[in-house]
Every structure is written in C-alpha cells, then in structure tokens.
Image 1 (cartoon, rainbow over the protein chains, first blue to last red):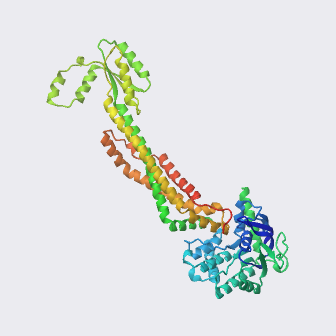
Image 2 (cartoon, one colour):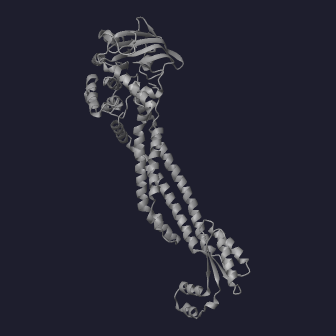
Image 3 (cartoon, rainbow over the protein chains, first blue to last red):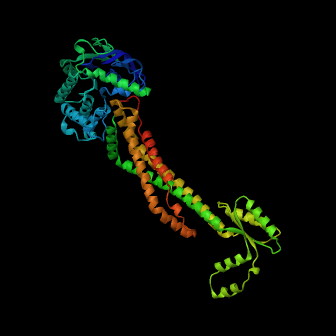
Length: 260
Length: 300
C-alpha cells in the first residue's frame, strides 16, 4: 500500500503540498483530481518515491522511504509502476525494450519479460508499435507506452500522472480498463487527472475520488484505510497476496546488501 | 538487473552508440600507440647510448719512460673513478695488430704497414665509460685530467662522434617527448569529449532507470562495460600495430644513425603489454562511470 502522512513539499520555494495525508490500499483505485498547479504531480511523484518530501512520511508497505538510505530507494521504487508527467522513454530504444526495462530491473528472465511486455502493450496500446523506436512516436503514443511500462508485471503499486492527457475516447476507455485490470490484480492504483470526464469514468469503474486544491486534500476524506503493519483486512485485502511480500523481500534484500 | 540483462543493455548501447564507441576505441588506439612507442623509444635510445658507450674510449698514449708499476697505478686509479666501466692496457704489439686490421687493404698502405714495428707505437690505456646521456662531457673531463699527468703523452677523447650522436639522441628524445605529450593530450581530450558528448542522453536514460528502481551501479554498468571493451580493443590494436610496424621503423632509424640493430627493442615485454591491456579497460571503466550521471531523486 501507499500511505502519505502529513506530507509537505516545496516546489521552487513555493508550497506544492501542505500537510497531505492519503492512503491507497492494495486492490484500491484512487483518483486524485484538481486544477493545474493544485499539486497533483508533486503528490504522485512523492507517492512513487521519485521525490523526497520536505516533511512528513511516505510509507510504501512497511517502509518509510523518507528515512531510507539513498542506496535502498531503488529496491522500493522497483515495486512502483510510475508514469510521470513526462513519459520519460529511452528515445533510441524500441517500444518493446522500453516496456521490458521495468521487468529487467525486477530481475525477470528476458524471455518471459518479452512475453509480458507484448501482452501489456497489446492491452494498453497497439502491439504493432513494438519494434518502433520510442522517438518515432507521437506524444500521446509515448504516454501509452509509458503507461504500459508502468503496468507491466504488474507491480504492487501503480502511480500514474495524467495517463489520458490528450487522448481520444477509445484510448481513454482502454486506459480505464487497464487501470481496473491492475486493481483487480491487487495493485494499489493512484491516478491523477485534471480532466473531470476521465475522473468520472474512473469513479464509475469503482475508483475513489480525492480532490486536491492548493496543495491540500479537500472535500471527502482522503484516508481509505488505516494502515496496518502487514497485510489488510476486509474488502481491501490484496487479491495479489504476493504484492506486499514482494516489497518486503526487496527491502530485506536491500538491507542485506547494505550490511554486507 | 541480472547479468544477462546488463549484457543485453551493454550490447544494445554499443549498437546505438557505435560511432561514439568506435571513436573511443580509436582514441584508445592512439593512446596505446603513443604509450607503447614511448616505452620502446626510450628503450631504443638507452640501447643506442649503451652501444656508443661500449665502443667509445678515452685513449691515453703513454710516454716510453713510464714504468710498469706507474702504469699499473694509473690504471688502478682510473678503474676506481666513478663512471668508468673498463680500463685496459694496450701494448704496442696489440696496437699494431689493430692498426693493420683497421687499415683498409690497399697497395698504398700495405707496404708501410708491413714495415712498421711495434716499437714505433706507444703503450696506451683505453678507458671505456659507462653509458649515459652526458658521456661526451665525461669523456672530455677525463681527457683534460689525463693530459695533466706527467707520463701521458697524448689523449684521444674521441668525443666528436659521440657528441654528434649524443646530440642527435638528445634532440630525438626531446622531440619525442614533445610529440608524445601532444599526441597523448590530443588523444585523451578527444576520448573524454567523445564520451562526455553522450552524457545528456545517458543522463536521461539514467533518469528512466532511476524511476524504474534500478541501482546506480547497475545503471552505470552497461556504459562501464562498453567503454572498457572499447579500451581493450584499442589497446589490443595498438599492440598489434606496434608489433608489426615498430621493427621496420626502428631498423630505419638505426640504419640512419649507423648503430647496430637490437632485437630486444623490437617489441613490448609481457609485463608492459599486460599493463597496457589492463590500464586501457580500467580507464574505459572510469570514463563509463563519469559519463553516466545518476540522479538520486527524479526531476520528472
């Protein structure tokens, strides 16, 4: 799960997030909506472990990444499928290779990574793109490939920032289906959008809406579940029971490597 | 990332950045050639100076009135002098034999050489000096001191040839060092600029991999491997080129200088080759490390 507690974050000296507390359980889809500049991207970057908050705690499973050594962060990050605002693809690599990289980092064998990447690409975008270089794609196509990279596996935690930006109707439905697919596999899915229509589609698909305004959570309560040290109870118990375990084992491996 | 993945990434990077890697390998080749030629050149000039030192003597021609024990004392004093490699007393009979051997056979010289008797030639002491770049100066200094001795009739320092050759060797060494320094700096600058030119692209790749949760070490490994391989290839090529081209070059230079050929100077030794083959990949590895900046946090 992802659990942000009293998180504040300054962007170029201005507060982007102020005392934000938010939890996303395994098997839950949370939609963060808000206007441009409301702090959505900052919130997701912090939740994905890509940026360090100025204060507060960011728990990914049992690990507060704010307290982790820099050398341990990668072992937590590899359990998060993150789609940043800039798709960040390797431009001189093929689409398939870009998607496979997420599995390469997790140590999956090359053959099975290739099969998984193909399957995810077909689900999210168009399998005919697999041999194209990333730089030959349009911005929208690059976003879909980056989304496929975030979902391949799938990882226990999925954090996607504006996945449907600039997308048409079919693509939007495909993205919603892909996020629901991840949630049904037990992933904790956190999605940000400034598009009320897309937000509504996710809510209709079972998502929980959180409204961000001026860097603060507004309106409905942002806390889905009170975190417990290991696992979850009730409806939110991960269908993919290995999700939590995967993070624990990664972190343990990290600790072991550091001590050695 | 597993070993298989890292090797795959290294291979793919090598293909996508093949121009930069070939340029890096070329730079390593030039660096290897410069380094190897420097080692071989130094060895050759040392050999030449040694050859010169063995064949050039200070010859002190002694007066007839010098007693054998005085000659022995003089020889002993000379042997104790620093920088003197060998001292030898040459009797008139031996001097005559040498003179006959050295003289070109011709009808003009044959007649008077045959008539010459050992008694016409003085005793002499030959002094061989230890080889060094200041050999002519040392020979001149020794000659000056010998001329001041009462029993010494004449001294032949034989410095002209030595000085000429020594001057050429010194000039060659200075020129060689200047060329080596310039070529080395040029090759290294080209190598570093080639590697750093791709830094921005690698920074972006690193950012992608940081987001995916790759460790800094694994992110840098493909570039480390690719540049270390380029270094190894360049060093191997330099060894092959030096092996093939150096003997001909050295023979040509030695022929021009008129010194004997030295087979030992034709190739680098096992130890020297090993150092080169190890140093180039290590330098490549270090360049791979600095060419891939890995951010701790992501600026996405």
